[in-house]
Amino acid sequence: MADYMVYWLVLILVATSMCTTEAAATTYNVITFGAKPDGQTDASQPFLKAWASACRSVQQSKIYAPKGRYLLKQVTFTGPCRNQIKVQIDGTLVAPDDYRVIGNSNYWILFILINNISIIGGTLDAKGAGFWACRRSGKNCPVGANSITFNRANDVVISGLTSINSQLMHLVINSCNNVMVRNVGIVAPDLSPNTDGIHVQYSTGVTITGSSIKTGDDCISIGPGTRNLWMEKIQCGPGHGVSIGSLGRDYNEAGVQNLTLTDSVFSGSDNGLRVKTWARPSNGFVRDIHYRNILMKNVHNPIIIDQNYCPSNQGCPHQGSGIKISSISYENIQGTSTTEVAMIFDCSPINPCTDISLRDIKISLVNSGTKAKSYCKNIGGRTSGVILPDNCL
Image (tube, rainbow, N blue to C red; front, side, top):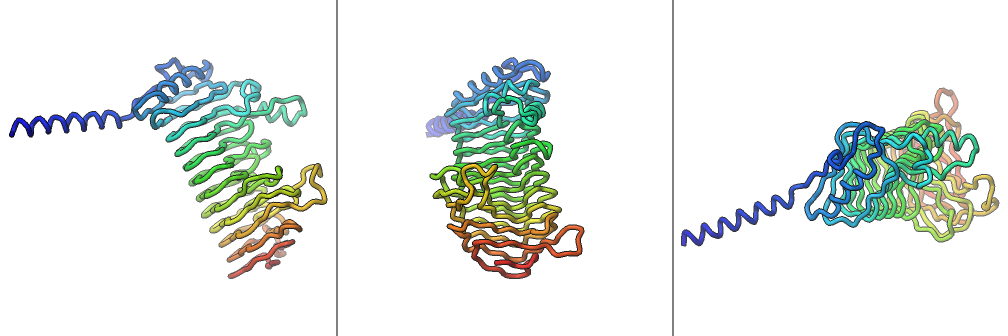
């Protein structure tokens, strides 16, 4: 009997040891695959080889980039993979000096068809200044590249990442589910064109928290098909604010639903809380949007709904937006506006905004003895608490 018990005890210990080994992550250091952290030697293939090894591993894997600078051309990390992968970057990934190398690719770093992926730390330096200069010159320029894109990925964590000087958007989340973005830093000059900080579209269950975004376009842009988006503790500015849209460019377009932005600060941004739709027929919608506990510091348009977006008056003059906007709440929004009209609700004549709620709004005109104003058109809703500027609902 004693021998029998010892036999089963040994089996249990062996099984436990095997489980522990399988659960432990296998580390793939990009240096061992030939990457040189000198910022001059192309490290694209070493990174892709490390990815291939991690992706086919049956164990949890970690790809590790130690301190240093790693030159990367356009790279695509493709799944599906066999187990969870963690990418830990202690160094900086740098783009080539010639902006055309990645500028013809639409993206610089792409993760696609992946489940259970985490990106921890690191800095992305896309060296976008050359591309912006080309755009400003009116020359024949490449299409440009977003810095890091997640396409059709699920259960994603992006933590502690810094992105600077992206050619176009810094971080794109497209057709993904369950994404956590936390403590990221995004930096680009305030006049850098189309350098949105974080862009989300056709995705469900995205959380963005504890992040600082200083850029030349929207701090966070929210495209069609976005649902269940939670944003908190965002520092925005300079930039164009947190923008839903522009929506309605296409007639058949997925709606935007159940978004919350809370406990955030806008400093010197062109916009604060913005919804923007094309002035043309479409069948999309925006509903169940909640803004609360927001501080505005010298913001150009602190609160704005613009359903008459029609750049260059091409293809949309004298039409009404088909986007149906409803159930938007603004609660405890305070601070200063640099423009006299601090709240603008310019809604569609064919689809007026409905169920708009204002509660405890206190926005004053910066450095002026006059009060800020509000503007309402084609809107219905309700107010409670103190409303400054004067309510126009």
